[in-house]
Amino acid sequence: QFKTNLFTMTNDELQSKTIAFLRFPLIVGVVLIHSHITDGVVMNGVNVFSPVDFPAYRAVSNLLSDVYARVAVPLFFFISGFLFFYKSAFSASVYKDKLRKRARTVLVPYLFWNLVVAGLFFLAQTLMPSLTSGANKPIMDYSALDWLKAFWAKDSLDPDKIGMPIDYPLWFIRDLMMVMLFSPIVYGWVRCLRQYGMIVLGFLWVMGWWIDVPGFSLTAFFFFSLGAFFSVHRRNFVVDMRLLLIPSVGLYAILAVCDLYFMGEPWCRYLHNVGIIVGCVCFTSLTAACLERGFCRVSGFLAGSNFFVYAYHGMPLALAIKVVVRYLPPGSELEVIGLYLGSACEVIGIGLALYGGMRRCVPSFLSLITGGR
Image (tube, rainbow, N blue to C red):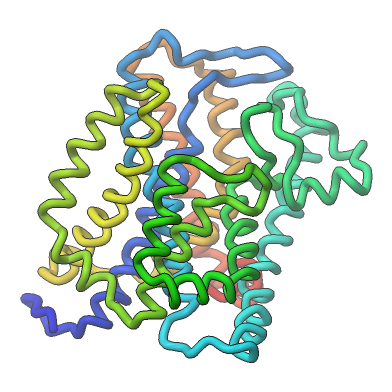
């Protein structure tokens, strides 16, 4: 048992609270990733703002968005894999039951939010065409194939990237659904090969040896399987990771600095991936330690809002950045950093307000579009 200055928690209670607490900070990380202006801001086919001349902004945003925040999605996959197999024997009937439940909690929100964003794109292309990039096909001209791609993987404007759904942050849900569909293979892999299977997947992930097919990301399969490993073998990941608190914090600090300094070097992607694995251990063990000592506590409101903020934030965030760049173009380092952090905070704040209002006024509908979270 873990003793705090307020009460005593069992290992399972601390693990549950750690998962609940992490949900909102990880969503903040996801929003920061998407508020990061890397190549520029394009409107009507013209790049109207470039961050090239702002080195301080690039350093701050690279550290927050491309180093720290990159732990968020893998850790979400880890938690999803852990909860999918948590305290349940796995069989054909259990598998069918889990997929049936996930159809309501994952598939329905996925379809809803992609449809909402398609509608918002239509409104933007119709009412505010000057704020759009001009590179996307008009919604009015969509064929049946275009609609299928919108709900799975639109053609990417960047030839080096695979397609994403029209509500692009939902690529995580798309890939999560696929790995859940293949969960019997995941179960057999982690049950029979144990830690050796994790080492193999981890090595493949660090090296980037995988097929680029939308929905089949190795990030999903590796971290979901890693979370499944702890559940299938009845291990408490907080207890295991807690032992690594001090070394993981020290090692992650070193890796983060090296990742930032050498970013752009071809070999740095391997160091970056190792840093993400260490970061998952660091953030998890640090959160558990803070909860254990009573330095922080779980907010039911923030933990409950995480899916809503995640699903809604993509297009409003892009719009907020474009509006500021068009009408109040930043001209100094502080202004660009303010745009970067301010747009993220604004969208998160609006999301929390919308979530709070819907929880009071239309709780049943809110439950439907967030999968009952």
